[in-house]
Length: 128
Image (cartoon, rainbow, N blue to C red):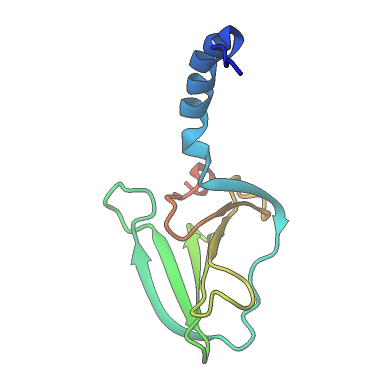
């Protein structure tokens, strides 16, 4: 059997490369229409602090960290009175909800983006 070089595929390779490069920054984020914030039942407030959520050197974002008996952590992110993100970091990745961050991208009260805990996310522009 002779395998010939596919000229059609060769012509599509540059387009595929452009598509992959253009979408590379979006892979960490997934749309999560109407994602429900986590339930605080069983969690207790552990820490409150201010943090820099947009990289400008100013601590404009208030973080509230809640822990439960298992050591799971919930963190809320609030800027200028607007709650715009929640993160969940679980100790047992085998059972129950997994680790994630949900973000309200446009301040409409709907958490519409989901990130992994290691993904980069920022304060939405609408909180300024």
